[in-house]
Image 1 (cartoon, rainbow, N blue to C red):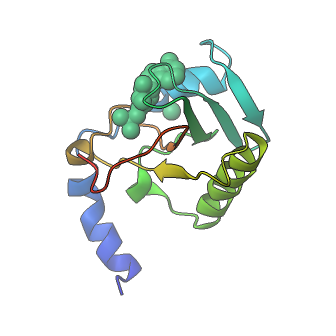
Image 2 (cartoon, helix red, strand yellow):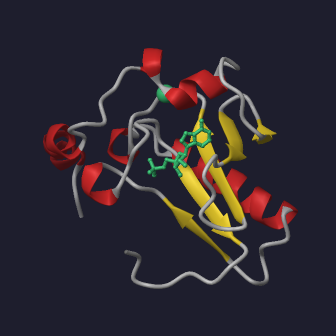
Length: 133
Ligand code: AMP
Ligand code: ZN
């Protein structure tokens, strides 16, 4: 099992390119209401809105309101519980529970992370292949 010290060592190289500050972050702009989005869920810590370029009939992004650059930068494990709980609630609300849905977190450039603000993709409404591309 990885110890916290290992994560500390990993963090700089694993987050190369995704260390942007909140000031010019697209998702911070949405959180702050400075950029429009189709918001589906909001609570004091989490916001969920529709992806602007949907890859499935249902494609929602679930983000912490606080600017966290990527998965490796999550220092409070409770944040994952909150994000996963919102994903579950949305999946139920949207009727995705029977056919299924996919949750994706891209972290870092090789994973294809393009927005350096942590987000969980909730994808549903079609079949998905495995392994992903
Ligand atoms: P990722 O590649 O995992 O970082 O995912 C970033 C996602 O953000 C992509 O699916 C984009 O289509 C989506 N996206 C980028 N800009 C916006 C925006 N202004 N509103 C909603 N979704 C966006
Ligand atoms: Zn941000």
